[in-house]
Amino acid sequence: MIRHVEAGVGWLKLNRPKALNALSVEMVDSLYEILDTWRADSNVSLIMISGEGTKGLCAGGDIRFLYEQRNNQVEKHAEHFFTTEYRLDWMIHQYPKPILVYMDGIVMGGGVGLSVGASERIVTEKTKWAMPEMNIGFFPDVGASYFLNRMPGHIGRYLALTAETINAADALYVGAADRYMESSQWETFINEVQNKNWSLQNTKKQLTELLDSICTPQPLDSSLSEWQSKIDKHFAFDTVEEMIQSLGLAANAGDEWSLKTKKIIEAKSPTSLKVTLSQMQRGESQSLLSCFNMELALSMNFMKNHDFYEGVRSVLVDKDRNPQWDPKTFAEVSPEDVESYFHHTINDSHPIK
Ligand code: QUE
Image (cartoon, rainbow, N blue to C red; front, top):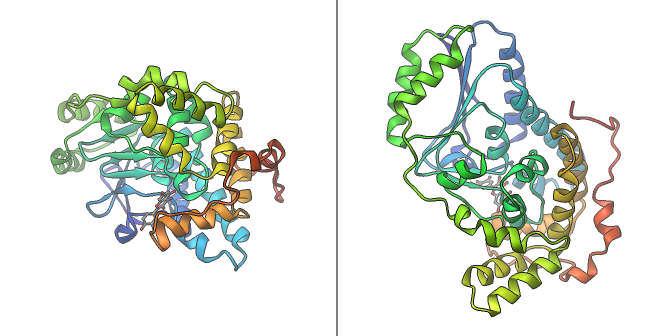
């Protein structure tokens, strides 16, 4: 982590650009410690988070590391990593000072977790936002059971089950971002932030004025908003099988979008799809804090699942994008199998608090 405090601003930069700033254990540990310290530090009025390099803010968690520990006490490493990551995300949601996150380029998985609870979420013409976990036989975590469920209609289910990438206009539409800025304005904006003397009293007002002077209306159309009625129709069902059947009927009647969406979902792990739909259903009626605790149980159980290692292998290790899921069919994933993912006992029964 690159960090410094100057003129009332705490600057944080994720610094593993070669790994698209994927969050390592060390990064989540130090982000948690730094933000916890700055909370009560009167020299810090405003926090600015961005990513090193040109590719983006953050591609996710360092799941490659967990993959490599698969025969070396992976559960111990996973418990430390996910507990700290979700505590960090939870702290950002409740943070008493403004946190601005610059969501330029890739903002996926763990990067969404860092940004979604921040108070000033800035997207650009280069933003690529996704919850991509369905590609690696995992599930959308970092609070997704909560924030995906609060998006318009069934868009959260659509984003969870397809792992599709969206742009700035879509991120604003679904409430995952607050403002649009041309990336060419970022340096100017940073200079302005450095030249002001930030005080604890009116940070919010000063920041709003500055952002108003630099941010522009986003120029793109949201594709998601155009697909809203189709998404609400096909993703309303209580089972993945019925969703696919519904998309199939529309595809047979000539709807290209339905055919494409059906093919995308059919390429995912049946276990991940079924567990994730259940996660979304359970998350509808839970607080953010209970969602984080539910997700901790899920992540620990996914560490015991073949499909997680197979998914990481196919996307990040061998990069053949040809995962062999096991089981391969929905029929082989029973309701009892799905239920078992939500049960996990660790020393502390409510570790995120
Ligand atoms: C799904 C994911 C991740 C992913 C790809 C997916 C993820 C993640 C990375 C990633 C990408 C580049 C790197 C790296 C990790 O990719 O969480 O170390 O260099 O971190 O389809 O969840």
